Length: 208
Ligand SMILES: CC(C)(COP(=O)(O)OP(=O)(O)OC[C@H]1O[C@@H](n2cnc3c(N)ncnc32)[C@H](O)[C@@H]1OP(=O)(O)O)[C@@H](O)C(=O)NCCC(=O)NCCS
Image 1 (cartoon, rainbow, N blue to C red):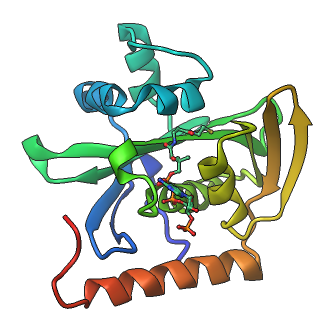
Image 2: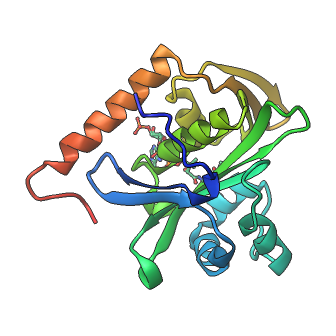
Protein backbone atom coordinates (compact mmCIF):
# COMPACT_ATOMS: atom_id res chain seq x y z
CA UNK A 1 0.00 0.00 0.00
CA UNK A 2 1.07 3.59 -0.55
CA UNK A 3 2.23 5.31 2.56
CA UNK A 4 -0.39 7.73 3.85
CA UNK A 5 2.32 10.26 4.65
CA UNK A 6 1.08 13.66 3.54
CA UNK A 7 3.14 16.84 3.95
CA UNK A 8 2.02 19.07 6.81
CA UNK A 9 0.56 21.41 4.21
CA UNK A 10 -1.04 19.77 1.19
CA UNK A 11 -0.16 22.90 -0.77
CA UNK A 12 3.43 21.54 -0.65
CA UNK A 13 2.37 18.21 -2.17
CA UNK A 14 4.95 17.16 -4.76
CA UNK A 15 5.69 13.53 -5.58
CA UNK A 16 7.27 11.62 -8.44
CA UNK A 17 5.22 8.90 -10.10
CA UNK A 18 5.71 6.41 -12.89
CA UNK A 19 3.00 5.79 -15.47
CA UNK A 20 2.23 2.24 -16.49
CA UNK A 21 4.32 2.70 -19.65
CA UNK A 22 7.29 3.68 -17.48
CA UNK A 23 7.18 7.45 -18.17
CA UNK A 24 8.04 9.65 -15.19
CA UNK A 25 5.68 12.37 -14.12
CA UNK A 26 5.25 14.62 -11.13
CA UNK A 27 2.01 15.01 -9.19
CA UNK A 28 2.00 18.31 -7.40
CA UNK A 29 -0.23 20.91 -5.81
CA UNK A 30 -1.58 23.59 -8.13
CA UNK A 31 -0.17 27.04 -7.29
CA UNK A 32 -1.32 30.61 -8.00
CA UNK A 33 1.56 30.98 -10.50
CA UNK A 34 0.13 28.08 -12.57
CA UNK A 35 -2.40 30.24 -14.43
CA UNK A 36 -0.43 30.09 -17.70
CA UNK A 37 0.13 26.33 -17.42
CA UNK A 38 -3.54 25.73 -16.60
CA UNK A 39 -4.68 27.85 -19.55
CA UNK A 40 -2.32 26.00 -21.89
CA UNK A 41 -3.70 22.71 -20.55
CA UNK A 42 -7.28 23.89 -21.12
CA UNK A 43 -6.44 24.93 -24.69
CA UNK A 44 -4.90 21.48 -25.26
CA UNK A 45 -8.16 19.66 -24.44
CA UNK A 46 -10.35 18.54 -27.34
CA UNK A 47 -13.89 20.00 -27.53
CA UNK A 48 -15.21 16.57 -26.45
CA UNK A 49 -12.98 16.56 -23.35
CA UNK A 50 -13.99 20.13 -22.48
CA UNK A 51 -17.64 19.09 -22.79
CA UNK A 52 -17.07 16.01 -20.61
CA UNK A 53 -15.30 18.12 -17.98
CA UNK A 54 -17.47 21.23 -17.91
CA UNK A 55 -20.74 19.87 -19.42
CA UNK A 56 -20.61 22.79 -21.84
CA UNK A 57 -18.68 23.86 -24.92
CA UNK A 58 -16.40 26.39 -23.24
CA UNK A 59 -13.69 27.95 -25.38
CA UNK A 60 -11.98 30.11 -22.79
CA UNK A 61 -11.23 30.42 -19.12
CA UNK A 62 -11.71 33.96 -17.84
CA UNK A 63 -9.29 35.64 -15.44
CA UNK A 64 -11.74 34.95 -12.62
CA UNK A 65 -11.98 31.26 -13.65
CA UNK A 66 -8.17 31.04 -13.59
CA UNK A 67 -8.02 32.68 -10.16
CA UNK A 68 -10.70 30.33 -8.82
CA UNK A 69 -8.92 27.28 -10.25
CA UNK A 70 -5.37 28.15 -9.09
CA UNK A 71 -5.72 30.19 -5.89
CA UNK A 72 -6.76 27.29 -3.70
CA UNK A 73 -7.17 27.09 0.05
CA UNK A 74 -6.12 23.40 0.18
CA UNK A 75 -8.76 22.78 2.78
CA UNK A 76 -12.05 22.95 0.91
CA UNK A 77 -10.58 23.16 -2.58
CA UNK A 78 -7.59 20.97 -3.38
CA UNK A 79 -6.10 20.75 -6.85
CA UNK A 80 -3.32 18.56 -8.20
CA UNK A 81 -1.53 18.69 -11.54
CA UNK A 82 0.23 15.82 -13.29
CA UNK A 83 3.22 17.36 -15.03
CA UNK A 84 6.11 16.60 -17.34
CA UNK A 85 9.31 18.64 -17.38
CA UNK A 86 10.86 21.05 -14.95
CA UNK A 87 10.87 24.78 -14.35
CA UNK A 88 10.08 26.74 -17.52
CA UNK A 89 9.57 23.53 -19.52
CA UNK A 90 7.02 22.11 -17.09
CA UNK A 91 3.70 21.23 -18.75
CA UNK A 92 0.41 20.07 -17.26
CA UNK A 93 -0.83 16.81 -18.76
CA UNK A 94 -3.64 16.31 -16.27
CA UNK A 95 -5.50 18.15 -13.56
CA UNK A 96 -7.68 16.77 -10.78
CA UNK A 97 -9.39 18.62 -8.00
CA UNK A 98 -11.91 18.22 -5.25
CA UNK A 99 -14.20 20.77 -3.67
CA UNK A 100 -15.72 20.07 -0.30
CA UNK A 101 -19.50 19.81 -0.31
CA UNK A 102 -21.95 21.37 2.14
CA UNK A 103 -21.74 18.03 3.95
CA UNK A 104 -18.10 18.53 5.12
CA UNK A 105 -17.07 14.87 4.99
CA UNK A 106 -17.88 14.75 1.26
CA UNK A 107 -16.21 16.40 -1.72
CA UNK A 108 -16.93 16.61 -5.43
CA UNK A 109 -14.09 15.44 -7.62
CA UNK A 110 -13.32 16.24 -11.27
CA UNK A 111 -10.50 15.58 -13.74
CA UNK A 112 -9.17 16.63 -17.12
CA UNK A 113 -6.30 14.85 -18.87
CA UNK A 114 -4.90 15.99 -22.22
CA UNK A 115 -6.35 13.80 -24.95
CA UNK A 116 -2.99 12.56 -26.24
CA UNK A 117 -2.26 11.23 -22.74
CA UNK A 118 -5.58 9.42 -22.20
CA UNK A 119 -5.33 5.78 -21.27
CA UNK A 120 -1.85 6.07 -19.70
CA UNK A 121 -3.14 5.96 -16.12
CA UNK A 122 -2.91 9.70 -15.36
CA UNK A 123 -6.56 10.00 -14.27
CA UNK A 124 -6.23 6.93 -12.08
CA UNK A 125 -3.13 8.35 -10.38
CA UNK A 126 -4.74 11.73 -9.78
CA UNK A 127 -7.73 10.02 -8.15
CA UNK A 128 -5.43 7.98 -5.91
CA UNK A 129 -3.47 11.05 -4.75
CA UNK A 130 -6.57 13.19 -4.26
CA UNK A 131 -8.15 10.45 -2.17
CA UNK A 132 -5.03 10.30 0.01
CA UNK A 133 -5.10 14.08 0.63
CA UNK A 134 -8.84 14.02 1.23
CA UNK A 135 -8.62 11.21 3.81
CA UNK A 136 -5.97 13.24 5.66
CA UNK A 137 -8.34 16.19 5.88
CA UNK A 138 -11.36 14.30 7.19
CA UNK A 139 -13.16 13.67 3.91
CA UNK A 140 -14.66 10.20 3.75
CA UNK A 141 -16.61 10.27 0.48
CA UNK A 142 -16.16 11.58 -3.03
CA UNK A 143 -19.00 12.34 -5.40
CA UNK A 144 -18.96 13.06 -9.12
CA UNK A 145 -21.41 13.84 -11.87
CA UNK A 146 -20.35 12.09 -15.04
CA UNK A 147 -22.02 12.27 -18.46
CA UNK A 148 -23.64 8.89 -19.01
CA UNK A 149 -21.58 8.20 -22.16
CA UNK A 150 -18.24 9.15 -20.56
CA UNK A 151 -16.90 5.59 -20.47
CA UNK A 152 -13.34 6.66 -19.66
CA UNK A 153 -14.29 8.50 -16.47
CA UNK A 154 -16.68 5.78 -15.38
CA UNK A 155 -13.94 3.18 -15.98
CA UNK A 156 -11.44 5.12 -13.83
CA UNK A 157 -13.92 5.12 -10.95
CA UNK A 158 -14.96 1.50 -11.49
CA UNK A 159 -11.34 0.30 -11.53
CA UNK A 160 -10.36 2.29 -8.43
CA UNK A 161 -11.57 -0.48 -6.14
CA UNK A 162 -13.80 1.98 -4.26
CA UNK A 163 -17.36 0.74 -3.91
CA UNK A 164 -19.53 2.99 -6.06
CA UNK A 165 -23.11 3.97 -5.40
CA UNK A 166 -24.65 5.32 -8.57
CA UNK A 167 -27.81 7.14 -9.40
CA UNK A 168 -28.84 7.71 -13.01
CA UNK A 169 -30.02 11.23 -13.70
CA UNK A 170 -31.06 12.82 -16.96
CA UNK A 171 -28.01 12.17 -19.20
CA UNK A 172 -25.63 11.88 -16.26
CA UNK A 173 -24.62 9.42 -13.61
CA UNK A 174 -24.21 10.70 -10.07
CA UNK A 175 -21.61 8.65 -8.20
CA UNK A 176 -20.89 8.62 -4.50
CA UNK A 177 -18.22 6.45 -2.97
CA UNK A 178 -16.36 6.00 0.25
CA UNK A 179 -12.64 6.72 -0.21
CA UNK A 180 -11.58 4.59 2.74
CA UNK A 181 -9.05 2.04 1.55
CA UNK A 182 -10.48 -1.37 0.77
CA UNK A 183 -8.87 -4.66 -0.19
CA UNK A 184 -9.96 -3.92 -3.78
CA UNK A 185 -8.47 -0.38 -3.80
CA UNK A 186 -5.20 -1.72 -2.34
CA UNK A 187 -5.14 -4.41 -5.03
CA UNK A 188 -5.80 -1.82 -7.77
CA UNK A 189 -2.96 0.32 -6.40
CA UNK A 190 -0.55 -2.61 -6.16
CA UNK A 191 -1.30 -3.79 -9.70
CA UNK A 192 -0.84 -0.29 -11.08
CA UNK A 193 2.44 0.22 -9.20
CA UNK A 194 3.72 -3.17 -10.27
CA UNK A 195 2.91 -2.47 -13.96
CA UNK A 196 4.75 0.86 -13.66
CA UNK A 197 7.77 -0.75 -12.01
CA UNK A 198 7.83 -3.44 -14.69
CA UNK A 199 7.60 -0.87 -17.52
CA UNK A 200 10.40 1.19 -15.96
CA UNK A 201 12.74 -1.73 -16.40
CA UNK A 202 11.71 -2.56 -19.96
CA UNK A 203 14.30 -2.65 -22.71
CA UNK A 204 13.86 0.37 -24.93
CA UNK A 205 12.69 2.50 -22.03
CA UNK A 206 9.46 4.31 -21.48
CA UNK A 207 7.45 6.23 -24.03
CA UNK A 208 8.33 9.92 -23.63
C1 LIG B 1 -11.80 10.74 -17.85
C2 LIG B 1 -10.31 10.97 -17.85
C3 LIG B 1 -9.97 11.95 -16.73
C4 LIG B 1 -9.59 9.64 -17.62
O1 LIG B 1 -8.22 9.92 -17.53
P1 LIG B 1 -7.14 8.90 -18.14
O2 LIG B 1 -5.82 9.41 -17.71
O3 LIG B 1 -7.38 8.69 -19.57
O4 LIG B 1 -7.55 7.58 -17.34
P2 LIG B 1 -6.67 6.28 -17.17
O5 LIG B 1 -5.57 6.24 -18.16
O6 LIG B 1 -6.37 6.20 -15.75
O7 LIG B 1 -7.72 5.21 -17.69
C5 LIG B 1 -8.44 4.34 -16.96
C6 LIG B 1 -9.30 3.51 -17.88
O8 LIG B 1 -10.08 4.31 -18.77
C7 LIG B 1 -10.09 3.71 -20.07
N1 LIG B 1 -9.53 4.63 -21.05
C8 LIG B 1 -8.97 5.82 -20.79
N2 LIG B 1 -8.60 6.38 -21.96
C9 LIG B 1 -8.92 5.56 -22.94
C10 LIG B 1 -8.79 5.62 -24.36
N3 LIG B 1 -8.26 6.69 -24.98
N4 LIG B 1 -9.23 4.59 -25.08
C11 LIG B 1 -9.77 3.53 -24.47
N5 LIG B 1 -9.93 3.42 -23.13
C12 LIG B 1 -9.51 4.43 -22.37
C13 LIG B 1 -9.32 2.50 -20.03
O9 LIG B 1 -10.25 1.44 -19.94
C14 LIG B 1 -8.53 2.59 -18.79
O10 LIG B 1 -8.56 1.34 -18.23
P3 LIG B 1 -7.27 0.41 -18.21
O11 LIG B 1 -6.56 0.88 -16.98
O12 LIG B 1 -7.84 -0.94 -18.11
O13 LIG B 1 -6.52 0.67 -19.48
C15 LIG B 1 -9.85 11.55 -19.21
O14 LIG B 1 -10.31 10.67 -20.22
C16 LIG B 1 -10.34 12.95 -19.48
O15 LIG B 1 -9.71 13.92 -19.08
N6 LIG B 1 -11.49 13.07 -20.15
C17 LIG B 1 -12.04 14.38 -20.46
C18 LIG B 1 -12.56 15.13 -19.24
C19 LIG B 1 -13.52 14.30 -18.42
O16 LIG B 1 -14.22 13.45 -18.92
N7 LIG B 1 -13.57 14.60 -17.11
C20 LIG B 1 -14.45 13.93 -16.21
C21 LIG B 1 -15.32 14.92 -15.48
S1 LIG B 1 -15.77 14.29 -13.88
